[in-house]
Image 1 (tube, rainbow, N blue to C red):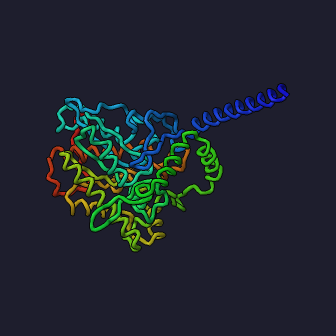
Image 2 (cartoon, rainbow, N blue to C red; image 1 turned 120 degrees about the vertical axis):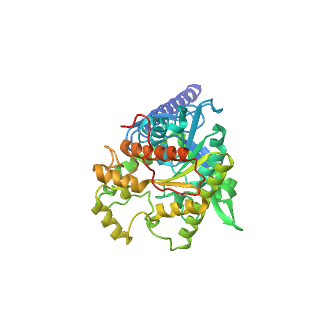
Image 3 (cartoon, one colour; image 1 turned 30 degrees about the vertical axis):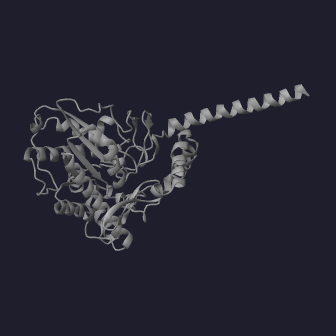
Length: 403
């Protein structure tokens, strides 16, 4: 009897050891092919997992490292050293930019180029990347409050991706509700949504993000997506990207989209107001969508006709108008990048392992965006603006070393 029990126990132990071994192999495979850099955050829904690192290969190829405070880039001192000028960049996956090496992101380009701005007189520029994939403006406002201010930035750049930020800010339109929302109540913005109102939902969101650290479900999901992804890839004839809401290119007609615009504009203005209270400069930047900067004008024209719009810059003009109304500077990148793409016959989106012309910015896109933003900031520093004159395209600022 004792031998029988010992044999059974040995089989159980062996089975358990085998399961652990397979689990370890599964985690290593998942980490290699589908590294996961995110974790639950009780205030923002999710954030970047401090100290995580790995190679990202699904779109572009880059080694990604998350610093000790949970954002991409080097570890910065909380107290700003003397002679340092800090730029904090808020945004979503365009800012996070895990598709390209860290030194090729537009945030890094801003830092290098702005260091030659005559108004800074040789100060060392630290351009800090506070972008997190999937974020809407509500999460960026909370990031400003909980992360950014402890670094005492001199400038805050809010990067607005109109392709999906409006949906992200709408409790009616956004399907992923593991995030805080703001709604209008009695004429004021109020936090709302299940993440705010329900302890049970917060527990579910915590489990959703933190159990994925084991990678198994993420591995199976990404494997399935990879297997079925081919037929749904966007093309020039059918330039539809799942991440983008195409209702943004025309004035809103439904109540849900009208509310989404109202909340988004209020959040942008709220961020501007808080930046002013902290005696920093503020710049709102509208990023492009890939179709807006397609190098062939005929492709853009066909897309406009399909949507029934006269041009693709409605959302960009609307944010520029908000800046004029509320007194802050706005830089619309899409018209600038469109001219560059068409003149140089290049795609600013897409990589060797993805369809060219779609998805996130490649290194060329980041370089041109970073240069345009740095030029605009240098102009603002030179002019010492009073925020009552809005410029939606920067002049060519003179930098030491420009040819």
